[in-house]
Length: 325
Image: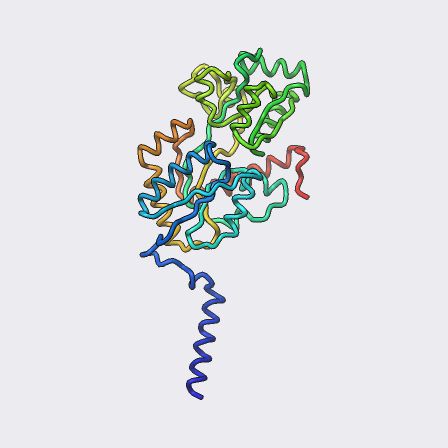
């Protein structure tokens, strides 16, 4: 009888421990982590800027951790497919991913999504910032932003511009509102698609990331760049110089499902930060014409939460036809 009572108490203790500390059974020993390959979900198809940045930083981080990190591309849905998969993953440090603004800052405020950006993720590090330029075909009639705007005013609703992601579409919509012009914003899934339709003159222009090599090659002409002038095209004004006092979120960061043990998060953050401080990585970022701007997990979390609030207030002022149902 005494043995039965002891066994029952032991089972009760096990049950209570499991209920209140569900991850204690599978939590990784920080001294052993990582002890198997880590999967890193990439929210875009192979070959784009986010994919190339991710593959470089995880290669360096894998060396630092002395452990494989395997990239797994899950493009589609403007990042929703990848982030939903990540949010549903086990919070053990073995599934992480690259995040960007659309699925965190914009889409959850415009439609129902299967996760909660503020509640379902932990944030590890910011690894870069995008740079964008508004470009047109090299043979387009516009030599400046002023030329483009004046023509758009003469032909309301006739000019087509390409944009990837809801953030870029909203940015171009705000520009149109301020300039009091109307153009058609055509959504595309990748920068490569945007470039192809601009080069093929299927659209009249587009706001595109990682476009600098094509500007230098002379296949497209830049009429405006993002927050400050680029050294490679110093005569092209920034949108802020043109009078637009707003910007769009532009971060790329490493995120994880909510609940990863703090010591594992810190180990990942330290390893990724070492990788980001590697001169080879910073040169890689610059070659892709992105900015090597890094933030800790805490600072990235703060930045995203602030952007959610700021962009949410702005979205209420726009009639986008995308109201949450």
